[in-house]
Length: 374
Image (cartoon, rainbow, N blue to C red):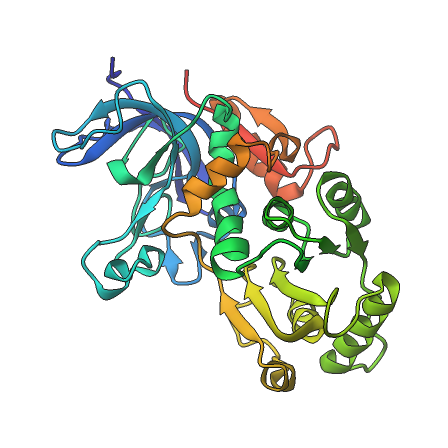
């Protein structure tokens, strides 16, 4: 039974959010109406709250926030093919391309220039509401082994799957290094371990984050030393790389050398270190969003070692199903990452906790989950 109200958490401007009752979305063709169950808070949601924009995506009208969600199928459009039924539990893949441009037809719908994505201007609808609608093929059934909270976490896990598996081609016995032990970095580590990586090295400047990474999935942790006075970034990266290799017993090539580097912090020094520490013909994947301006790039490392350097943006075909499968089979455990839970009426507190990195009791925050409106 579909309710006649749609409570929504709506951003009107910088640090200006309101609860509103928006119309229940009307579905047509192959669309599905989903009653949202759980929603995770992403750094991008907080960025819109604090700045009203991310890069070229600028808030020009009120927008419902939220895009990391699970839910239950409430209503099916007339053209939905077999495979979904009312009552099915699903993970929401919150964006879809136009399906007709060259990149969509090539299987890269995440790069569609006409992408419609939850809580991303100019689209003004998000999943921090009672109801959200999507094309049927953007909904992924959740097996019984995957909880609603896990289902909300499938979105960031799919980001990690895209980076580590689809683009990074991580395979069993690889040595993987991940720069940044925030939520996405931790999920990249988890996917690498699930795919059989021999070693997963976590790099961060925060000891508490590294301690958690080690207790979670990392085999090794590193805090880079500080830059010396007057030291240029390339010299610093080379010095730190040599120190890390010595500390961890990593060769610069051959068996045991670093096969895959994932940068999940956006810090220029980490980008440099990642390219320096890779073995010849290794793969570097940029996951974290750094400053918009061009970063210093060690071209000699890229050229002389013939490195594969790839940018990673959201997720594409097959990433959600693999993410769900990894959780279903117990290869990735998402539960330790959920550190705070909030009711829908306390959504702003969840945003403030995510921004501060800890809640009002001082407990560190990794992922905050908000329950649906009652």
